[in-house]
Amino acid sequence: AAGMAREGFTPFVHTFAVFMYRRALDQIEISIAYPNLPVRMFGFLPGVTTPGGVTHQAIDDVAVLRGIPNLTILETGDATDVESVLDVTLDIPGPIYIRMIRGEIPRLFAADEPMRLGKARVLSQGDDIALLSTGICTEEAMRATQALRARGVSIQHLHISTLKPFDDPQVAEAIAGARYGAITMENHTIIGGLASATAEVIARHGLGKKLIPIGLRDTFIHGASRPYLMREYGLDAAALVRTVEDLTRTALQIGEDDLAAVRLNPVHSAAKTEALQEVLGARFAVLGRTEDDNHRQ
Image (cartoon, rainbow, N blue to C red; front, side, top):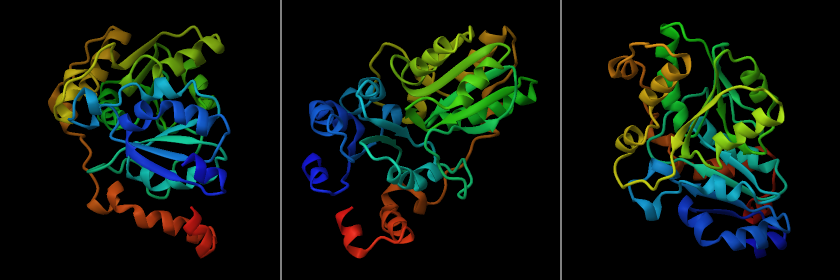
């Protein structure tokens, strides 16, 4: 991919996320990031989205890659993110790593509201708690925030799709205005990912707000179904409710039945990433690229 990029191509590389950054880390850093080449690396099935166990679970990819200069890091959270992330990559001159979901995925956001580089989606507004979620955790967060609003908890919920650079002013503004503090929610270790990036924002701006991270602790995870793993390792909607109760010191009496009532259904199979190959060609056609340009991409 690095060699192709040096010859003027824009390579799109994809494999399981865990193989992308573990097996080729030196090549990513020295052969791609150092010369700032336009290689687009799609890492599928990050974190608990795969039942394959430790050998197949990318639980620290953002932490490992976030320190590499020139590298942009994106993460998709629904079908709309998946469909529009290709457009986002066209505007970035250097290398990109994308945490990509696949299979049965929900549509959380309107199809005509695409992902925007460096801009969080504001999913709800409030001044009690600032909630930042990314990837598959946004669906769980949305399940919980609806129930929390019904109990009178006001939440400023931001869906984060750009993990690096992490400089959206909405993040600092939301945390600064949060009465109780901030919560982050990620399908990743709490070391080096969204939680760490958010803590850096709090420190850099001198916000003096409490931050509670929801994510994987300093542990490896077992192979099992995604719902089981999210429940077992505290990444689901119920974990968010418990965290809000701790932060506000309030018993909210929200049970699993309340959360199940707002569970979001996945979209039809045409929105699976396996079926999005045609989208890439369509994107270039819309941009007026020639047939030869499409071949080079």
